[in-house]
Length: 307
Image (cartoon, rainbow, N blue to C red; front, side, top):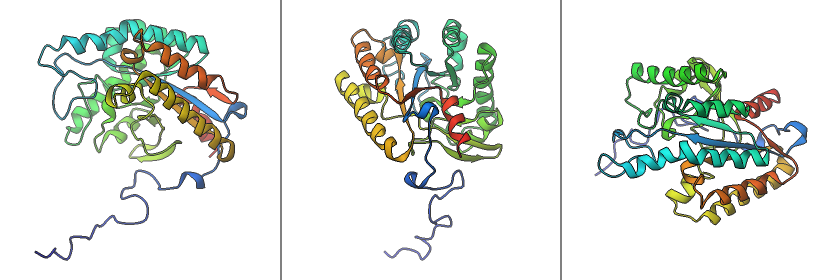
């Protein structure tokens, strides 16, 4: 059977991307960046405070880390709750001890159920990133735009009102977006998004409400990805953090500043048998000269000033 003549014809086929969200470019051809104080590495630590509903919907899919067994899945529900009641305080203690500041991605449901956590973040001068409504309300193709608009507005407004922070960052639950998500978060004053994993440095994204930026929020250097999804050991997590840092540290000496992003889930790394691994990995990074511990908003502001 022969193929029709138009089978290989694609109207958007061209050099670079097949969409207009961002301009295609090679990292090594871009203008080098210098971080404050001449630092080589901007260390961006992002703990995630998530709420997984006990009746989490299965459609369009369940966010990673969600309920697994038939309702009521109390085993997984209470473990996720453990992170918000116990594990996060161990993570905070580690970060405080190393003098590391963080950007905390937060579901609106966390604000409503654990308001004291927002107080703890504010007391430390850390940043809050809007993380959607909860881990059962995903953004995806086919979601009614009115419904998604309401979800975005609720997530951002709830966090701003509770914290008094400007809240300029966004991380979608499960990093899932619809074709409208970027436009909707830009309309609410969001300046950067953490969902895209295709670069090591920030880059501009086009939306119907102006330019926002994609920040290199790591999916690979992520405790959940490494230890739960890949079934690697705690020591392997430490080794991968070190390897990532060592390479970026060497590269930055020649190509300009780089961003080292580390994603932390307190229900994972806040466990008694894992917290030592997190402390070891972060102590290694923070122990080097030329490391600037900063929030996502601070990193982006420095980056934009130099473009």
